[in-house]
Length: 146
Image 1 (cartoon, rainbow, N blue to C red):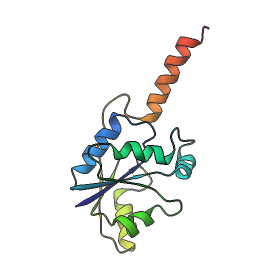
Image 2 (image 1 turned 90 degrees about the vertical axis):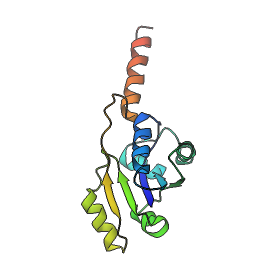
Image 3 (image 1 turned 180 degrees about the horizontal axis):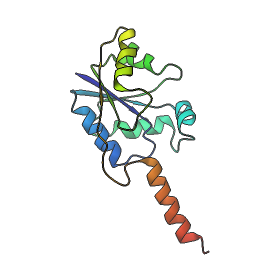
């Protein structure tokens, strides 16, 4: 069974490892769609690493079988036209669609896909923004008095 997971993957952290391992449990081939730079800018702000660099890093992770960089425009096109997955694994914090909405949108395009939402990982630094915030806090504390 082919599984798809998507994300930005700007600063790889334990939350990403948890997410990708959990996604891989839903099939035997995991394709990861790494958000392109334009999408990241639109949704989250300036990426730290380029989409090419982020995809290179993700491709080295153990559960990942294939990595593609997402397209601009309709994000579902790459899923429907190129990958045709059996399962799409959504992270607990990916809220663009509910599982039912996404499954319905794909069915409208002729693709019957099981959409699952993965559980949240309980860990204080399981998010890129949390890591950046902690780095800034440490940096400011250390260098604010100089």
